[in-house]
Length: 329
Ligand SMILES: Cc1cc2nc3c(=O)[nH]c(=O)nc-3n(C[C@H](O)[C@H](O)[C@H](O)COP(=O)(O)O)c2cc1C
Image (cartoon, rainbow, N blue to C red; front, side, top):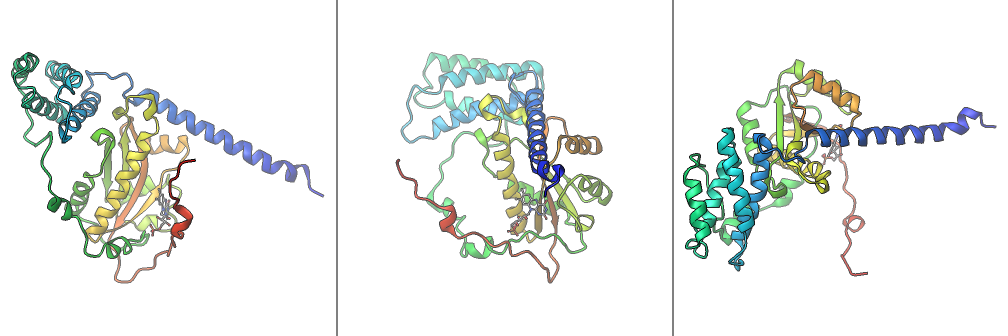
C-alpha cells in the first residue's frame, strides 16, 4: 500500500514545477517591462538607435524592390527626420543615427523624389545635421555570382564535422580569433536588422569559473574550458507587445552563427544552457558586469580540439519525423 507521501508526491512535484514556471514568466515579464524599449525614449541613445534601424530598414526595403511604389516611404522619411533632429539635439549619436541620415539622403535623392518640394525641405533640414556615416547603407546591386561565393564544394563536410566539444586542448583561443569569429557572426540576420546582441567574453579562469558556478550543465568539464562567451540580447531593442518573445529568437540565431563561425576557424565549442531560475540569473548579474537590460540567452564554451577527442554521437532523427509538406486543411 502506498503511503500518503507516495500518493501526493507526483502532485506536489507538478505544482512545484508549475509555480516555478509562473515565477520564471513573471521574472521575464518584469524584465521586459523594466528594460525593453516599449516607451520609445528618444533621449536614450540605444533605444533611439534601435528605433532608427527599424525605420530606416523599412526605407531600405522599400528602395530595394524592382517595382517600387513611387510614392511610398514618406511616413518613415518624416519619422527619420524627427529622430535625426533629436539625435542632433541630445548629442549622443550612435551608429544607426548616422546610417539613418545616409538612408534618408538616398531616399530623397531617388529620381522619383528628387524634384519634390518635400525632398527639398528634408534636404535643407539635413544640411543642419552635421554627423555622417562612413559605411555604405541603403541598397546595393547584388549579382548571382556574388551569391554563389557562398556555395560550399562539400557542405556535408562543413556541417557534419561540427560536434559539441566539452574537453578542449589546454590552450586559450587568442583574442584575434575570437574577434574574427564575432565579425563573421555579426552577419546573422535579426528582426529589422536591429542587431540586438551583446557578447561577453573571457579567458580569465577565475571569472569563467565564477560564471559557470551558476550554470547547470558544465560538470565535470567546466573547470577546464579555456574561453567562454555569454550571449545576451539587449531588451531595449524591442518596442511592441508582439515582440515579447522575439529576443529569444534573435539570440538563438546569433548563437548558432557563432558556433558555425568558430567551427569555420577550427575552433570547437559547446553551447551551455541558461535555462535557470530568477535567483541564479540575479546571482550571476551580481558576479559579473552584465548590463541590466541584457538578457542572457546561453553561454558558449570555446577551445581548440585535441588531436584525439571523444564526442557524443548525438544522432539526428530521421527527416520524415520532423518534416511535413504544408497543405491546406
Ligand atoms: C541551447 C543549448 C543548450 C545546451 N546546454 C548544454 C549544457 O548545459 N551542457 C552540455 O554539456 N551541453 C549542452 N548543449 C549541447 C547539446 O547537448 C548538443 O548540442 C546536442 O547534444 C547535439 O550535439 P552536437 O552539438 O554535438 O551536434 C546545449 C545545446 C543547446 C543548443
